[in-house]
Image (cartoon, rainbow, N blue to C red; front, top):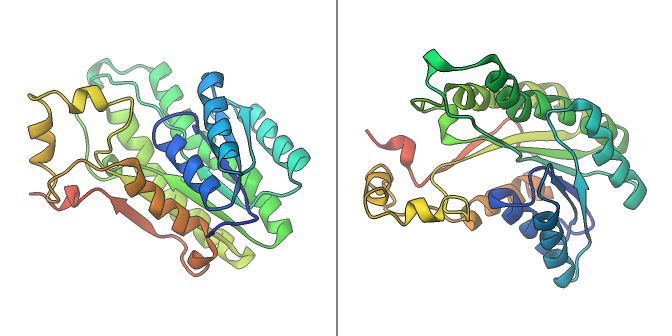
Length: 251
């Protein structure tokens, strides 16, 4: 198993891509702390699924945009396992607003979850990883870190910032044997968007922009994350990997 014996935190791990990442890391041998902000029952379902595989998992409540709550995650890792090897910054959110109607509140919330929280949780985790002598940080961005989206500028700006965050942290942390990389999914089917993707008026528009001819599944993303979280990626840092079926290649 690729991450056997490692301890991993997955933020936003109760649903969607985060849920799939938590399950994949558990399947590959990691003990997983499943972070959630509001959906305690969903997080416990992920924990139960990992335990059913024979793995170790616990749920941890923390709103990542509130830096004062980050200690909850670190304390859980410390008390339960005594170490932290992998941080997957997956938690994300968007508030769709046309630019001319965008509010400061929406800016603060979206940048808080998608960028500020990632930066300072990574800082706290990296201090611990540095003392251990190794660690992996994997950031989950989006194709919209490259492709702008009408009515969703705050999200796109935050995700673009995550790419430079990844490179900046990778540069500073490389001498400490901490690798920092970024995965940017394209159109991925999850429980949250499955109904929309099933809409016969909407799906063809999406597929027309994907050269591979299909919407991705969560396993397409988890394979990349598990690789970057594993010892196989010890010489990969500052990398930015699109998992989008070629969407960004489309004219």
